[in-house]
Length: 56
Image (cartoon, rainbow, N blue to C red; front, side, top):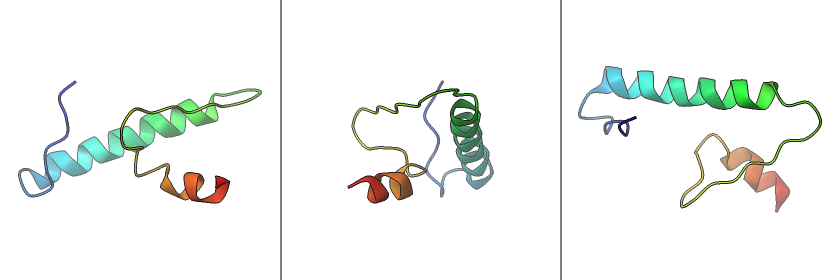
């Protein structure tokens, strides 16, 4: 999977890639049964920032 382009390079593709990432995270989190652990390397996904802020 290639990285998403910068918003100014191809705005349509960028929006599509952002929506795809959001959808994958949604599916992963809604399929969990008992608990959910999320790990990342480097910068966390911007979709996780509200969650991270409430846990600190």
